[in-house]
Each structure stands twice: as structure tokens, then as C-alpha cells.
Image (tube, rainbow, N blue to C red):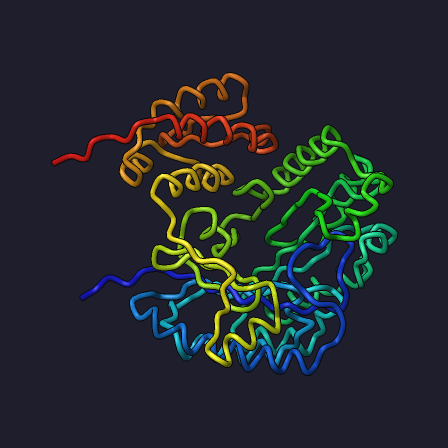
Length: 392
């Protein structure tokens, strides 16, 4: 009997009430009932067609992101989740997550979603400062965020996550520390902390020089303040930007960081499945037409060479507290670990990396903040290394 493999499913909901000033994800602002109906028809068909290609996989994580899934509506999300459950092999206790904005996390919708099978919710709080929320273009207040978190808990969500941002316009380190303490009073199970970075093509990018954004040193101070405050509150930092109470790490996102397989549905959704990586077009109409008329829906599709996979192993695993390990690396990629270990030992002396009791190398919180530079050094050493001979 063929062994079943683990699979994650991501559903991209490309609709929002309005676009935030900093957002470069593919989403469309404003109410678009006709577009939503067409999207629903297309994504259901896409799920039916794709499931037939995954008979030997068990889906153990499902994640609805966006956009704003709760703006799309609970009934549509329920239909999509039911279609996935009907067409794929589903694990006995899958993690089923959705993202929500406070202004769209209404009691009746949350109740319906929890009963439909969603058991994890990630609420975009961002900050406790209403003036900063306005500057970011967020369509809610902090009070609405507080109520949404409490309501999610009341409706039966046992795993509640909140998203926060730091380095906001005019924000000080002390103000950020206050935000952390305020949000901890909500008693979330998981907290994501992201640095605000202007992305080309967004409104924030156009006025970034006048936005009074934090410089790199200030962002570093904010990041380390979050590590300290959340650690004291019992949270484990399991990835650069993510902190969870024991047992509450996001299993779906861990698939991305540990090389697991996943399939994405919806425009701009990415997949890594059966040895190939592919991404749908960032075009709602193109996606819908492609699915319904059997046309092309992919923007790119490629087979990833083993050497490139080895580089991804370094880049993604070193984002996590799990880190990398010599036997694991050599067995998968047939590359020597010694060139990497030389660099890691130097990082250890600089308190940027550490070797755990079970022999794994991982970055420290200080190392996480300069991870791009550390990983670049490792990738350059990897590219110069000669593959090991296969054992006969």
C-alpha cells in the first residue's frame, strides 16, 4: 500500500473592503458581488479538478488568506471548505485557519465559520493606536479589534492569533512596548510581529520619505523588545516574526518554512506540489476565465533543481527555531556541511547563531534580525561547494 504524504491547502480570497496603504498582496478593494460570485464558481471548479491529482496525499492544514476572507462572507467560505473536504483526503484533526479583519469579524459569521470546521483565526489588529490605524488605511479601530478577539473566543475558536506591525509612522520604541502589553491583555494564543516595509507599487511607497518611518536601528530595538516581552509572557519564538504559546504554532505556515508540499487556489496563489512550483496569475478575471474555459491560469511553473532546493533549505529553515542539521542536509542534498559550519561557528562567536543540544544550528534573536546577511554568506559557501559522491 502506497504511503500517504502530507499536504497543505491555501485558498486566496482576493477581496477587501479597502486597500491598506502598505499592502502589496493581490486583492481588490470595494464590494464586488458579481466578481465574488464568479470567483466562487471558479475556485470550486478548480478544487474539483485538482483533487484528482492528489489521491496519495492527506490534507492536514488548510489556510484561507487574502485579501480579507471574512469580507468575502461566511457562506462562501463554508462552500469552499466543504468542497475541499469532499474532494480531498482530510486528516482526522486538520488545522483550518482563516484571516479576518476586526470590522468583518461579526458574531454570526464567526459562529457559522467555527461550526463549519474552522478552528484557527488570525485577526489583523496591527496596533492599539487609532491614529496610526488611520494612517495605515486600516478600516477599523482598536476597540473593534479587542471585541473581535473576544468574540472569536466566545464563538469557540480555541486558537486565536493576532497580527501586529512595528516601525509605524512616528512610532517610538516605548509606544511599541505599550502596544505589546495592551495586546497581551487580549490573551491571544499566537502573535505575528511584522516590520513595516514600504513596497513598490503601494501608496506608502510614494510618500515613504515623508512618512516618518523608523530607521533600521529603531526597528531592531523594536524587534528585540518584542522578543523580550513575548518571551516573558510565555510565548516561544518559532520563526523570525512569529510567536506562539506552547502547541499553538501555525502548522500551515511551518509547511512553507520546512519544505512541505502545498497547493494554492485563487489568483496569485502559489503551490509547491509533486516536485514543481507554480503560481496563478495576479489577475482575477484571468484566473476565472482560465478555470472555467480550460485556459492557462499559471503565471509561472518550474521544476526546482536539487541545488536550488538546498539553498531554499537554508533560507527557510533558518527562519525557524528548528534551524538546520548536518545529517539532514547531507542526506537530502548530497552537499558537504563543513563549509556552512565554519560560517556558523563565526556567527556563534558573534552571538548570532547557536548549536542546540541535539546538534541543530539555529539563529539567535539577534541573528534573526540580520538573517539576510548570514544566509547570504551561507549561500555563497554552498554554491562553491562540490557535491559528495553517492555511496554505491
